[in-house]
Amino acid sequence: MLKRLKRLLRKRSSGVDPTLREQGIPSNEYYQNLHDKSKAYNQNNWLLGMPEFEQHCAQKRIGEIGCGNGMFSSHISQTALEVFAFDWARNKQLDTLPSNVNFVGGNILETDLKTFALDLIVSGDVLEHFTKKDLTILLPKLIQSAEKNFHVIACFDDGHSHLTIETADWWLKEFQRHGEGYRLQQCDRPNVAIVTNL
Image 1 (cartoon, one colour):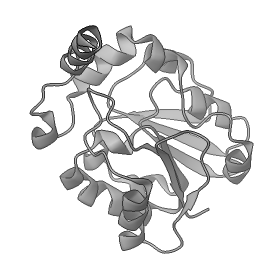
Image 2: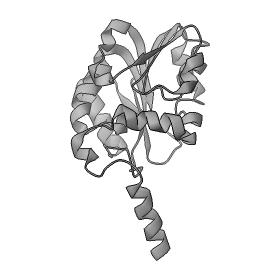
Image 3: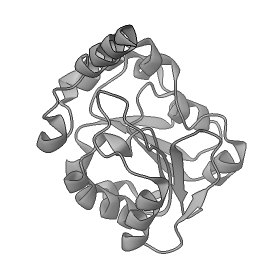
Image 4: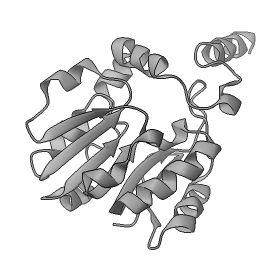
């Protein structure tokens, strides 16, 4: 029991400063470090492997918020018209993107998404990294900047960078406050919500 507690405490102390939830999202340096050193950040993308969802991307202008390693943006470029991969840290895997994928660096809270004329905005394992205060800015922006949205959201504490830890129903209500037609899509992962209006 003591060993388990020590492991848990080490895990909790290894990431973001505990006051981060009050201060806001981690810095771009924090995420750049993850991109540069984390094997998981370089191998995983929660948007991959959902063919029913991918059908909605064909011949569309897609915006991936928090593109991370760029795996989804690269993959979906095979059928999408154009892809905009947004992130404020640049993963080295983004150096070899297909010609119809454009990396857009910077803080998404300060980016004018409407200028990209997006058909669909997507994210995977991203929105929970924002504070509730920042989400009051970000969610309406996402909804107003594209007719359709598809977001895969972690509903659990990862011990270091998830700043808004809420249930799937909470996330759904937040989207529904700003737009119509949003629903929860069935998800095979425990404690993960998919909110969409597709």
